[in-house]
Image (cartoon, rainbow, N blue to C red; front, side, top):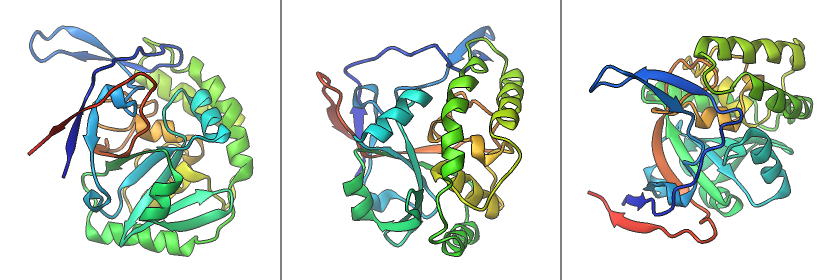
Length: 261
């Protein structure tokens, strides 16, 4: 059963490195500035509580832990998530971690993360979900892309200049991709870090989430690819928010639970 998490505490957005988009309001036709959403995973900012049985094969799961590494990634990317994984169905998650590409049971994944939120590609079918499984089996045990994740740190800081408010989307996309070509280089290997693995798996399944180099995509980028948000790079398909499997309450915040039909 799903539960609505009604916000009682509203935080403030950080504008530094915060992508924006100008839309026309349906009611008046006047331009309105839309900010990239950064607080979705804060319990006081709303959401839907789901259970593992609500997941479907192919769902993209973003998460964080209470570790210093996770905290560091979140500080650099200005996002509440630091890790990305895929749900393969049949009680299995697949992820690229320091030990390599591995699978974990649902319980193991739930026990190991402090915050977990799921998103879904709306057009995925059974054949494409199977392609994700095939890709995961093919690369099981593949070593972690340590070099790629080391280069991600300075790149994540530098790219914030491309994401300043009021920079048009096409300019922002061109700036980020250009900076990535310089800072991440042209040399690729057959290893993965977490979000890179998710992007490559979806590309293998003929459902590319973006045409951008998977090496420049972080868990924060996947978070902002959801419907209603402002993505940093151009996306091929917005992801649907499924709900929170696990949340970490903010100090001093409360969550009102309301049962939904």
